[in-house]
Image (cartoon, rainbow, N blue to C red; front, side):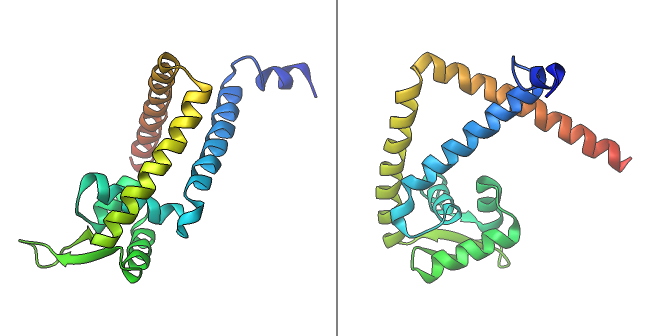
Length: 162
C-alpha cells in the first residue's frame, strides 16, 4: 500500500472520518438492535411504535418520514403491526381520504415498556463511553457534518434537474 493511500485512511482525512463514522454507526446500530431483540419485531416496527408513542396518532406518510421508510415499507410495517393488534387505522376527522394510525391499548403498553428498556440500554452505552460534555460535542459535530452533507446533496439534486 502506498504511503499516500495509507495517509488517506488515517490522520483525519475525509475518507478516515467517513470510515470511522460508518463503522461506529454500524456498531451502534447493532447494539440498538440487540436491545429490542426479545420483542419479536424488526427495527422498523419498533420505530413506528416509538414514533406513535412520542408524537401521537399520525398519518401513514408522516410516520414514514419520521422513521425514514419509503411509502411501501411503511405501509407494510403498519399492516404487520395492525395484524398484531398494536395499532389501528382510523378515519381522519376532516379528510375522508386520509387514515390516521393510532396505538391500541396493547400497543401503547408494549412500546412504553420496551422503549424504557431500550432507552436505558442506550444510556448505558453512551455513559460508558462518553462524558456529558463529550456527548454534547459529538451531537454538535454530527449535526454539522450531517447538515453539510444534506445541503450538498440537495444542491447536487437541484443542479441535475436544471
